[in-house]
Length: 197
Image (cartoon, rainbow, N blue to C red):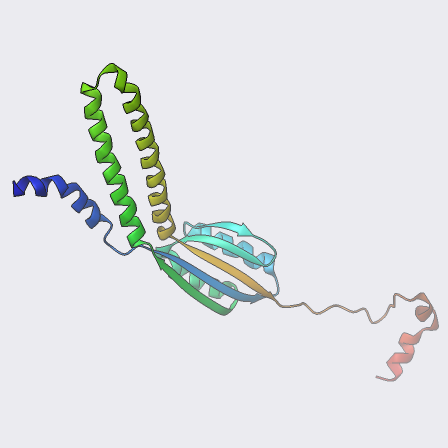
């Protein structure tokens, strides 16, 4: 009898063991200083794509990326070569318990579906419609839970990176030989100014 009980719960034990390793969602933020934001962002996108990542949001001041966790160290080095990093921060969220909960909910609904499939074999014709509704509902619940589970797994595999910029203002070029005021140009004050240099 004990052997049967162990066998009955064996799939749940396997499922629990399969997700027992810690699963975390990682978020990185960088602030970089640059005089050419567009050029830096284009290089960042190229670097991300070359490492299996992609950008999710892009505006004049920041860019958001998803990057495989295994490529983070190499990407950090590339970013240091592209621009001056003035600030960086990191946070992580443990999703192990959420993943285990979802896995067990999927398992329990799959077992319930198996029970309903057994009922279909012996149920009177009048009850088949009710059983079918239950099966459709359970299937929808399982798909929803699997979607949540896969979403957590994808976010854990791909770290979130946000890079914001601190722009270095380029010096304004001034023309010392021509004034926007025509009367100054007519008085030839530029040559007079040369005398005081």
